[in-house]
Length: 575
Image (cartoon, rainbow, N blue to C red; front, side, top):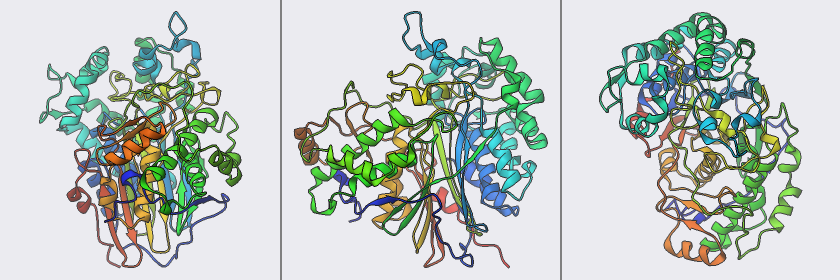
């Protein structure tokens, strides 16, 4: 039975070691996958990516097409009014690069604008409407990917998304239920009402959602590239829409947005070379820290409750450091060397009592809020060996709830990911301090953790949505692959999580058995067992021994089915 390592937190088998940034996985340039594979959260997005491959494109073209289609069919999760991270492996150059398309704070940003008259954080302003929105980064990322890494023009890769935006697609349950939960906010804004109430009532399952303004915006992006969104017609409408609702964006800050290419973080775990996300993602640092803390124990010799206890205590310490030290590296000095060093991990390890939980100071015991609808991930491998792990988001369900009239662009509410009031939790129960305080042009901290793992036998792409729970999903996914599980089994495994604040272990049904829960409680842990499921892990795998492709699409969400994945595996083109 292969799931023993996860149930009750068992079997974290070995250590990861932080290694220098110059390290790169060695891949034989003569060896290529026998085709291409895509895993995404929606069949139309997967098919759009495959269309790009069929048209002669590579994984990077497929990423543009998949991302754009997700922006059309998953407005609850992501869109061109938001941002994301793209981890790329360029097989020809044998090079990895991290594309940071995180949103940036507008020039009008100051912490006091998010406080009420009593000086407390105003959740409505932080989470809804124009003040909650950062300058979008996703359109710039699509342009950058196409121009620097792709083979096809944007007119080709964006065509499927443009068509579906104009002609419409069937509304599915998640969109309708999500709209109902956010309708009071979304119906404040004229642009949003024009899209979602176009037929006079709220969206219903089976109805067709058409977005002609979004189709026009995507057409301009396809025709004019960067200027099609950040200057000209669309930019003017965005600025006018934000101003009409009381916000303050400027034309020069839209035109001044730029993606950042960053060096990925690289780690070693057993036979696996791991390439993952650097700041402003917190994911790679946390993954490195957790595994280096755990390297001090032979976990296989411990019983299930103690193994779980140690994993949770390692998670707790990594998330504490996330809160205190991590932020936009263009604005703050992030102590990466210290946070990922073995000596620092040894000091944290020494602070863990083998039989008692460490109380998290100043925390409540409430369950952590979930983010599983509001972010999306897709994974791609092509026949050249190129790989893409991409996670994109608008933050909460339907982002800020506001569509700028005439654009179809649903704006994000990523400003809530800043530490708008130091020491005050945001919508996901995560606190922050000065390192993640808002400043004009600064990028808010993220948990998005698109990652690659590679051994002599396999190359795997994975990532997930889930707010602060993304990191532990990716962690458990990596451990499952190391235990020999196939991709679909990996994405279906039950999950558990601890994030320092709140001071509680969250666990899906089946992740921790009753005896383990009881033992953890006796150690002083608060355990919320049997919580609703979370996340939407998407992964693809290249088995180099058999030269076969496979993948897994999370069954927790509609579209997460094996048949969707099977459609995504293509044979290599004939010579």
